[in-house]
Amino acid sequence: MSSMNMNAVFPSFSSKLATIEDKVMKIQEGNDTLRNELIEAYQPFIKKVTSKVCSQYIDRTMDEFSVGLFAFNEAIDQYQEGQGSRFLSFADMVIRRRVIDYIRKEVRQNRLIYLQPDEEDEEGRVEDSYAEQKAALDHYEEKIQAETRMFEIEEYQKLLKKFGLNFKVLSKHCPKHVDARENAKEIARLLTENEELSQFLMEKKQLPIKDLLNMVSCSRKTIERNRKYIIAVSLIYLGEFQALKSYIQP
Image (cartoon, rainbow, N blue to C red; front, side):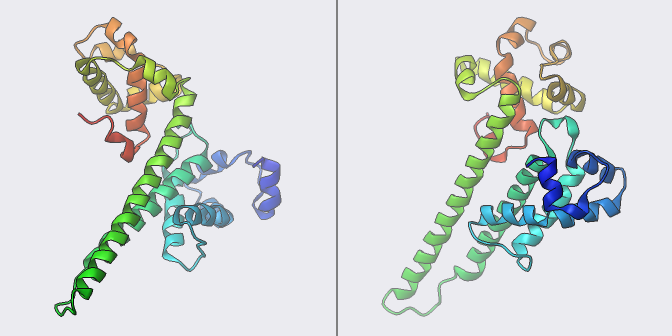
């Protein structure tokens, strides 16, 4: 949506600040009035994202909307201009994750509350009801997990694209030997645990090879040969793609 269209949708929210990213930076500097205005103006956006995650219309009276609202506010506090995405894309991701976490929590609680078979049983009918409920909740949680994984894959692909990478390229540059892959993963982990090196990677779109050589025992040639794979693994850590981390764990 262009800035002109945004002003048309939210006419009372027009200001001298050029972009929503500018507004977020001002809020992070302590402008609470602007924070309240931004949250109020983007409630339709929050409802839309929340409704999409829940596969049903969500209005302002529902708990899921409150979760989305808090997530949008969290996104305002956590957003960093140099992280490679626009604010609304980042906010979309945070809202989705928080709402999915909320749904998962509700599913677990429902299991504890509702999935207790009655002591009395009539010809197996109580046991059948219990089994059906458990199967339904298991299926629903699997669906949520699958949706989370698909969402993370889409966001991960967008992030890879900013580095000139895609799955086809990675398949060609994935180390063939297990030891080499694990070594590359360890380099990526060390990189992402260092805030300065992580920032260098996200801003320059390059590996800080010179600094990495001071942290690992392998050669420059090894790092350069596995450069694309190391970057790809680093982005999973830095993007906090929880569902995708299972693919890179030892």
